[in-house]
Length: 119
Image 1: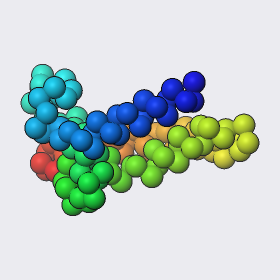
Image 2 (image 1 turned 90 degrees about the vertical axis):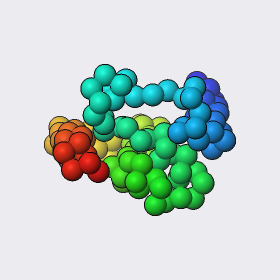
Image 3 (image 1 turned 30 degrees about the vertical axis):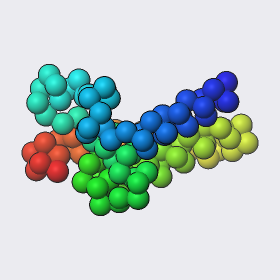
């Protein structure tokens, strides 16, 4: 199962490295933006990933600053999921309601601010 997950992530990485989401018409588009005309918290994540893979930190920041800032958190949580039996107290601490609420509120604040302030 882990091999399959790693293979899928690597394949997606190769696709995002080789193809610019702006130019590739077959890349998935945001349903929320298509329907409402406003950005969701994840809008620009594909462009951010592509820019980051090409070493363009500035381009990644402008595509989706929040997703770029959350990458270390996401990597940490993915790692923690793989070692949850080895570090049960750390796993429990990372999944406390306060942590989850803080992350959820951060996403909502980003969502509102990026549409009001055009971030």
